[in-house]
Length: 166
Image (cartoon, rainbow, N blue to C red; front, side, top):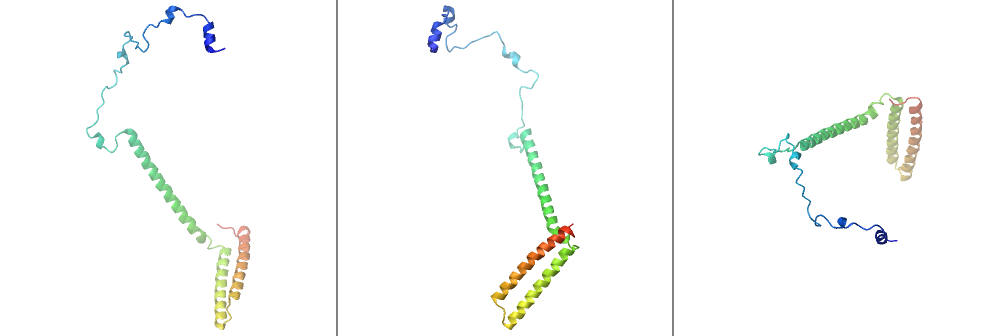
């Protein structure tokens, strides 16, 4: 059943309800209520501003709050950057200077110095004799690599078990 069929089967509309009281599209006027009671008589009706209002840097309180908030954020960022730089400097300097009394660190420095000097002197002697070849250089580099790996694991064991870093 359609809506038109359902509406037609119901009660009929009374003739006084069928005719509109005002024409369609008309405006309803009610003069009984006054809008004068809606005006706030306690507040100022006219607000004035200074003549140089448009030339002012800060014209509203919201704008002043925003400028203040931005300045605070800028200062906060500067402080954070300075803290990060100081932490980076401390971390950079702390690696070697904190371990100058660690025997593992001192032993590794001495071994690296002695191995470098020994290899350099040996290479010079071989070159002076005319026996320095790429094969000898490769074997020496391989021996340094194996020695470095063994030294790394031995030093790591000593640092973890016997002499932990400060």
